[in-house]
Image (cartoon, rainbow, N blue to C red; front, side, top):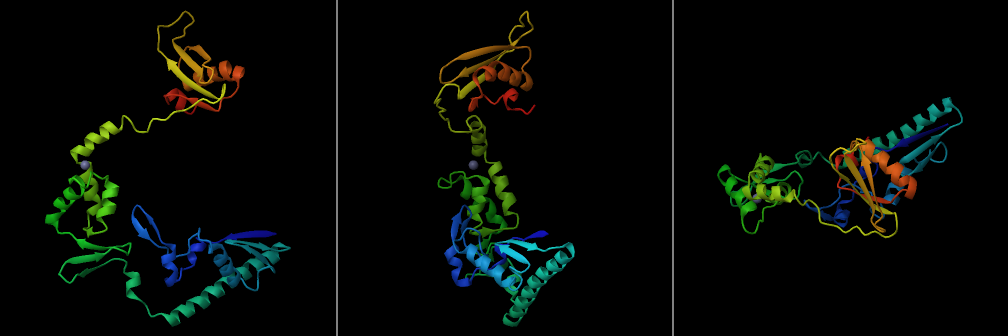
Length: 293
Ligand SMILES: [Zn+2]
C-alpha cells in the first residue's frame, strides 16, 4: 500500500543565506531582484533540498518511506500498518519543525521591521520618504500640487516618449509615491490624446507581417470563402476556395451556407479525402474557420 505526500511550495520553505542572496540576483521589467527563498533553477537547489528532506525524515527513510525531492512515498504491507506509518512520517516532520522553531526563538528577539513591510521616514533635507513594499526603493512622497506636473513630465515630455501605463508606473514607483498613484497613472495614460490616436492606428496592424513559405506539395493550404453571391439553381451562394500553396492546385467548392460545419465538411469530403491532411492551413480567421463547432 502506498501514499504519496507532496510538499507545499517545497523549495521556498528553505531560506537563502544572507551572504548568498546576491548570487541569485536577476533583472526584469520591474527592476533588480534577488531571492530570499531557494528558487527552483539554481544548480545546487536539488541537492540542498534533498539534503533538507533527508535530515527532516532521518530515521524513517528507506524504512517506511522514500524521498525524491518534494515527493514522499510512504509504503506499507497493510492498511493498519499504513496508518501507523503515515503518522510516523508526520511526526518526524513535526519534530523537526518544533526543534527548529525552538532554536529560532532562542536566537532572535522579535524584529519589528520584519512585520512592517512599508514605512515612512524623513530624509536629512526634510523630504518625506517611504521605503517601498518591495523593499529596495526609497520613494519620495509626492505632494498633491506636483502630481499632475510629474505625470505629464513622465509621459508627454520629449524624452519620456509616451510609455504605456504599466511601464510608466514601474518607472515612477522607483522614485515617488502617493496613495492613488497606480490609478492616477492609468488614468493619465488613458486620457492622453496622442496615445488615444495611436491606439486606433495600432489596431489596424497588430502583428508584424510574416512570410509563410510552402515547402512541399499538399503540406500548406490557403483557404477562403467567397460570397454571398447570387443564388445558383442548386441553391448555392458561397464558394469555398482551397489552394495548395506549393503546387497552386485550386478547388472551388460551392456551398449553400457558409457555417463552420459546412466549411469543415466540404474541406474534409472534397479535399482531405483526395489529398490528405495538410500540416498548415492559412485563413483570414473568419468565424467559419476559427469557431468551434
Ligand atoms: Zn501619451
